[in-house]
Image 1 (cartoon, one colour):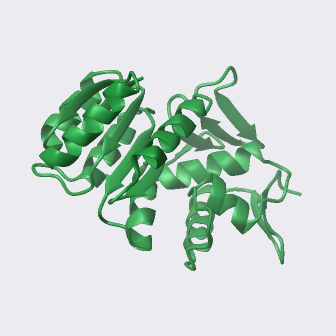
Image 2 (cartoon, helix red, strand yellow):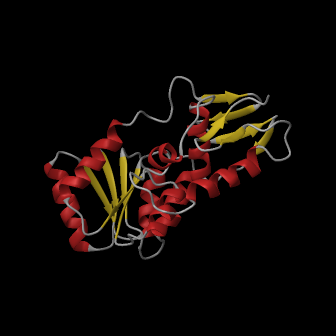
Length: 225
């Protein structure tokens, strides 16, 4: 794999580079946010490993800029910021995984391999449709009844999951695991908050609701009755 590391700590960067080289990965490194963004936007990588706190431009801004440019390369945050809110912010910005320092290199490799096994976002069918709602996975755009719906990266990820499960009930646990990649309950209302935001954008002002709460079970996206 060709991996970009954006990390300002020389010791950590060297440790990562040497470890990844030993596992036959091609590694490029930037020691500040601006150079990292330049490489991320101008080169093609299989994976990016990004620190949150960087000189020049912080990691969250890099990820948001990369995702707004429709670059779908898997991104793993590697950072000392390990609070629940920090993780949520990182994943909402568009990262695919989040690992807190200090870390075991074996776990880092396992997470890299897990990201590499994921199917690419662009599949043979790059458009999802339910009723008059349409999601273009390549352009990362959403329209309903021909009108554009602007979503944040994590809202897009949530809607995509609901669309792929259209007609089926998805539980809060399923959403935490598959949208936020939390394999534990963060004890926050992150799911409920994002469902509410998504409803306000996808359903409000349109004919017929698509996102429904199934009391005691979860949520379902389906065609209006």
